[in-house]
Image (cartoon, rainbow, N blue to C red):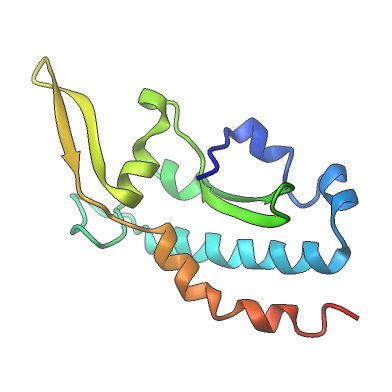
Length: 144
């Protein structure tokens, strides 16, 4: 899993000179559109609500940082697009990972550090799977 900070990801946005030199116009167009489609689907799956979503369902948005923090960028090593939530500054930025995959994290509970178990509330994998069917038509007529 590729973990990028926001400043690292910005250098790999599709409108940057380095990315434009490393890719063809067709690659940029297809990968950028696919990244935008997945990002939009993931963002809209995270709905503003009070409380906590059911495990297995996308998380609810309380502040909006998770929704606005979903970005996509070019991965020059794999010549592909990386789509996901940027790391948040709190406690190593583990909130997006814990929401997507679940797991355990140390939290202060009533003044005592405790291991707290988080159940998965995936939002990126379902968005990717839903948009994957749209990928082949994006490539159609892009290579000449």
